[in-house]
Amino acid sequence: MDLDADACFRATRARDARFDGRFFVGITSTRIYCRPVCGARPARRENQRYFASAAAAEGAGFRPCLLCRPELAPGLALVDASRQLARAAASLIDDGLAGEGGVAAVASRLGVTDRHLRRVFEAEYGVTPVAYAQTARLLLAKRLLTDTQMPVTEVALAAGFGSVRRFNTLFADRYRLQPTALRRTAPRPSAVDFHRFVLATRSPFDFGRLLAFFAARSLAGVEQVEGRRLRRSLAISGADGRPLAGWIDVRPAPRGPGIEARIDVRLAPALPRVLAACKAAFDLDCQPQAVAGHLGELAAARHGLRLPGAFDGFETAVRTILGQQVSVKAARTLAGRLVERFGMPIDTPFAGVRSLFPAAAVLADCAPSEIAALGIIAARAQAIVALARAVAEGNILLSPNVNVDDAIAKLRELPGIGEWTAQAIAMRALHWPDAFPAGDAGVLKALKQRQAMQATRIAEQWRPWRAYAVMHLWTALEE
Image (cartoon, rainbow, N blue to C red; front, top):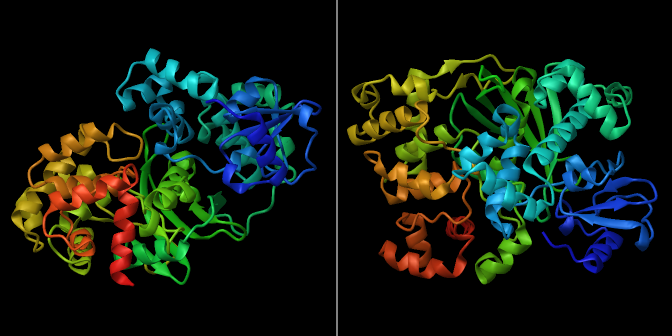
């Protein structure tokens, strides 16, 4: 990615938060690299170098600033990049996939060859995917050492290092510090049953409307919205594939736009995935100025409106099927019956969070008649079982940064899943910003149209942010 040195210098001098995470500043006199919003005294112009990624800065011999902490910089939404493939790969690496299966796993997820991914990735970031992945693991480890009391051994494993000795060596070589040097200044947690993280985003950030969206759809036993907090259970796989279950508790960040997430210690082996789920659910990588500028008058009154993602893609997809041609309230009732019949109990500190949503493998073993017995229309019961089997067998991945066209095509092939359902799943479970369920009743009503084709023609002007347009249309109906 080409960087304009004059523009980078002006953004750094102004500490412009709009550029936080878009580039990093290396200071040649100290060999430290910073975020453009760093509160330290600005270096002289001739002592500044600019990098498209933290990995590129570290590859040039710079160490991360301990004041502004580059690992806390917000990410970039997929459609913001000139090379979407490179951004998708970087997001998957940040979420820990490279630590599980290497760069080959990232390329496979995106449906490209290793060689093509390397070529596009280096053009965008100036480093290889392997180098980027190593920096991502080190920065995550740095964050865990600073913000948690996890033992160094657990930090190394959670960050994706297979060997503690290898982790200690790389950390010392790259940062000129022993891992325990950061641990001595780490804050003591207020409790020992969770880890606390602050995840930043760009302003404006309408946390209130996001929370209202989740509250209107909260699933009894699985989720609870209380005051300014969202609590829920979560089942996820660790780096070794072992199933894990725990809880999360999200509230607004204490300072600046973003969220504060408390994460159950039982989920520690899967922290990269849990943090990725939180980022997607609250759309923290969004660039609201770009979205609002493109949507124009539609978004004029709500620049901070975000696109709610999913904590669990399969759960969201099932609930989308249950929501076919019924109200949000009715869909919640049906989903509640599904949890009560097939969900697993879980211990949490919250009275309203006591169950896990049924796993794909559990519903895959059901006969459609068992699900229909809960008062769910037979066609939808059949669709849920077919989806569960496809997910359990690995034929469909319901998470951000997959090949969206391929995922939507596979969804359409399942019985009971048409265009509206596939697009609605893509909008939230895949967190695809250009998804557009044209036949949605709310969309048609807001646009004063009767046919999906007419809505699709109108929405062409909002590409590649049509999913955000849907959120604005839905919100306008409620105002």
